[in-house]
Image 1 (tube, rainbow, N blue to C red):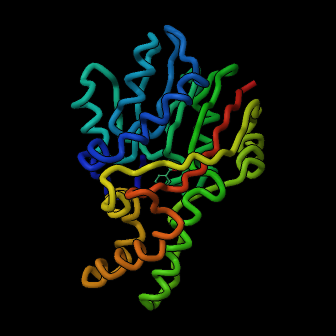
Image 2: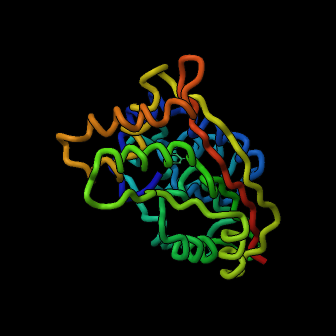
Length: 254
Ligand code: BEZ
């Protein structure tokens, strides 16, 4: 999660719990150890932060959204959470690891984020992250753009997310002095909850940056059009399946 979008913690927790449930595999890669200091970058409502803390590590969760941080504090009052923009991380060589699940695709300027991550880590520390990689939500974006053009909106459709390739992101990490030890891009088709309403819920939760560019009086028409365009590629057996594609990466600070 992060800045630049109005987050709805209730809709997130109720219908989109897959975001942190599917992040559990990434925790295995992090392998947090008792006593380690770990920064959870884009902690959302705090569920993975809590799982990291359960390993005995000292964890701090940061998120750009005040609403999400407030919910995280309610969920886990014993843990430490702060509102912080991922492009303006203020820590200096304080952490053994930086962990980030399903956040970095929200930030179109990856450079200051990676700078902050590199600065935050001790020598010998690690960065473990997963987010949308090149091609993520590709069928959805094609449908959203076709629907946009059909509706005849005057400005062009814009992909609101940052989805790099492995090579692009690894080069960025290396240019900030981090050594990439593991990187993979994999398809992870993800069923959405709530049957036929699943795509609407998903768009209400995650697609605000595009929807807010449309006059309120035309939003329903646009949402109907996206559903129509996306259905052949993404609706099967009574439910929507989002074509997620994840970039998972581990890098160390020498
Ligand atoms: C993702 O987790 O890959 C994702 C979630 C919402 C919007 C775009 C990507």
